Length: 59
Image (tube, rainbow, N blue to C red; front, side):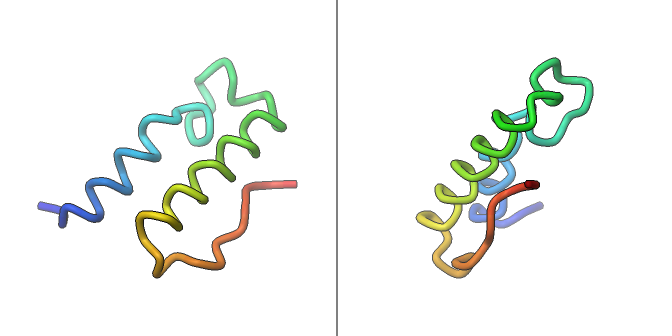
């Protein structure tokens, strides 16, 4: 069983399938994937200050 904090982190990432699932039709849209990754990282930084400094996805 994961801690509530880890569960929240996993939930945030799961909700944005196109950043991690190559079968998702939006996965091939690199700019969308990067912006979504950056948004998810920003949310994680707000919820979990210990992840400050995490940089956005691929260039």
